[in-house]
Image (cartoon, rainbow, N blue to C red; front, side):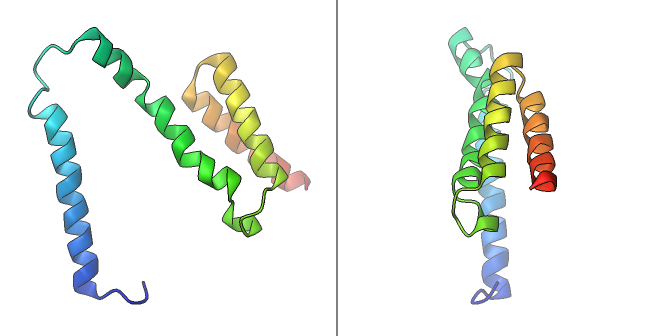
Length: 109
């Protein structure tokens, strides 16, 4: 953390904590005990499935381990995870298979 003072880091941590609490309180504290419409529940059910590709895609397309260039283990493991996720409709199984494919390909190459 070059260039950041201890006070700045703690201010950032506190600001992120307040923001996280506010976001969670907006759902749990304000509308947590109310009946939610079916369309909203259906959309919330797909939130983890939408977040996982958003977290993984930058690491697949611009991996730091290969200086930002495309690498076969990253692309192949993403394809395996996508295929398993589409086939089995399970985000956890897709993530596990993707990690296993990545580890296996790195061991082979």
